[in-house]
Length: 229
Image (cartoon, rainbow, N blue to C red; front, top):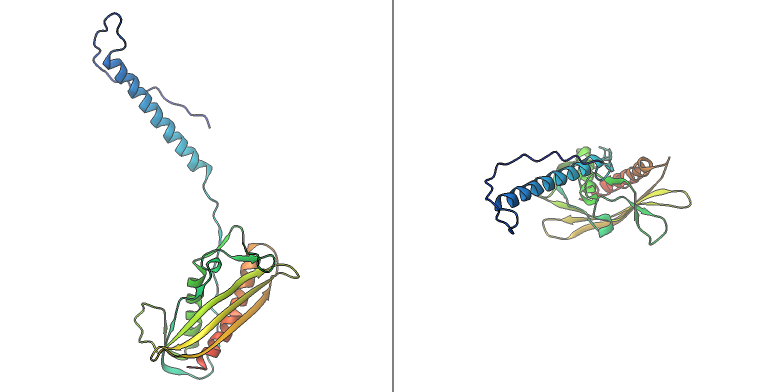
């Protein structure tokens, strides 16, 4: 990019006479300094413009999970109110990165892709929607929403990844505890796993497989939980 620096605006300064043997007058020094400052500012501005025009970090493909449409049949707990706590997770799963496992014990992240929010926040929101869609309980909410809670659904994200090799597949494992909020006792606990084959190629195929696996696990979690409160 060629920088074109226009001539600085001339500023009228009083010029003291210069005696023989003396250097530049105060006025001349001030004019030269002003010219240098103006040129420096113009160059800095032009370079900033180049950075903007050159573009920053490319936008990432952003993906959301779907809320499972669970069955409305089954026992109803019209007076029960359930709190869906934010799931816990190890650092590798506690962010927006989409985890890829080329081999057991090796963790990479899907290039150019991310979840719409931190994975625990996304899982929490979609679990709450799944419980709400059943219409089988009096209320479902998240912390801070003012519900008088009877039970908490406490979840740990143990795996939420694409496993490569031997047929790429999505693998999800969620460990769930049902906590009686009235007395602090654990009513029941269980681990839920689900898998889905990757159909196609690229980021959309990986995200879609994880979404299907998550929905499979969510269906089981909701039915199991409502049968134990």
